[in-house]
Length: 178
Figure 1 (cartoon, rainbow, N blue to C red):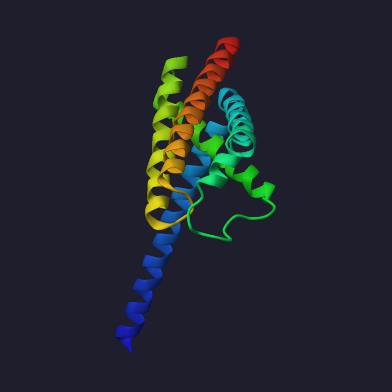
Figure 2: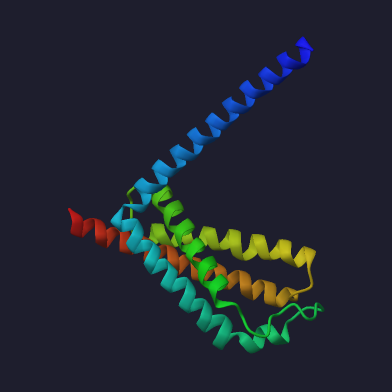
């Protein structure tokens, strides 16, 4: 019985320690997140990048290349929604804008110029556009290889433009605040 009580006390200590460590990690993250989000250049860049991603994707996928992607659909059927759910597209774009902006802010280290932003964005586009779509191509039948290549090129371009806009907006806001 003494062994069970000893094990239980050890378990409580480990559990309490783990809970304290988790709260410390979350508190540290919250503090860093709050500091980052209070920054006016970051907020302006997040809004700018959201607008770029949201509207350029609408123009590209909804108008310019809609027929192209219909013609290059894979053998999977019934996977496209009849009506898109705009709230999830909006929220996904918000997540992309926040992630790109905060990653760029750390990567640029205060050096906000057009080419630096475009380079960062193109690398992010390479990751998202080719890396993720190749994995999707290897695991599903949503599109053929031609559509994969066009989608990858689009993401490199889109995120390159987005990175340039993030850099430019941060540079302009920083210049005005000094």
